[in-house]
Length: 342
Image (tube, rainbow, N blue to C red; front, side):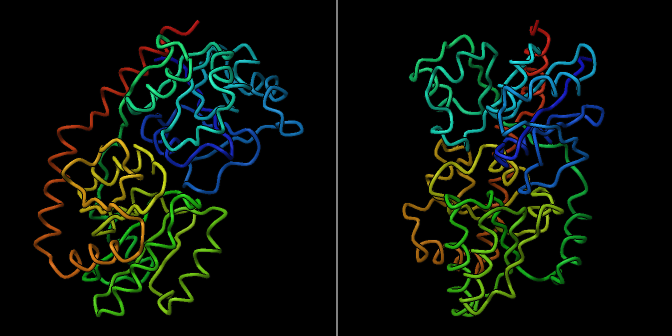
């Protein structure tokens, strides 16, 4: 098996990190430039020095940290820069949740690396090619989801941890805690449902710079006790296993991996078109044309009050996941890329 080390930094999006966790094996180490991100539950991570925040300056530290002959799988631009400057065999995987302005100036920031790039959607691949990146260097690899775990056990454990009864209807908002994710709209819609007499507990996995803002806003609705920001100790897959509905109110792509995990969990899902810009959720999702709280609250109320509608959407999610999600395709594609690295 090819010797692979996964390289991240604090700016690696949660969606890319989730893809890394879905694909890596237990013997593949994770190394982070500087402190690791707080947005995702991670296995053991080794942090290495990035002098003055300079990615190229971290190259020799990356080289020292890698086993002989290892390939680097970088999950955001800065780790890829460090690896390439260290003259290491590198592949860069970009999430569609990556703000494209962080890749400016395109295509030079990517082309100068001279390493293969993978993306999870055809739309993102075309965006990079249109910006001038050589088509031969950009490979489409659809999102993989982690192998099935004991969802029933995870569901019981998470609900017990947060004091949620087996009968409670639980809503998960699994997007990374960023401004674009608009968790505040989900809190607002949840509060409207409570005022209408339909209760839902809200799970927000992960952590991030918007956490305190969201917690404060939830408290102002009067229903803050029904929102649970889980912190990085709870993984998104466990949060989705504990949930009955998933909601994505994002004003930008939520990330193909996180959307795919909601599908794989068999959850009825409400999503804005911006969150699922490429239509990955297909017929399994309720589409929102507006990111205002009222449309989200209306759809949430409908699902809270109609268990049959939830069950129908859940069946669609499972069927669509079976048809479209192929973890082995993604793993095989990455193994081929690893084998071609110098």
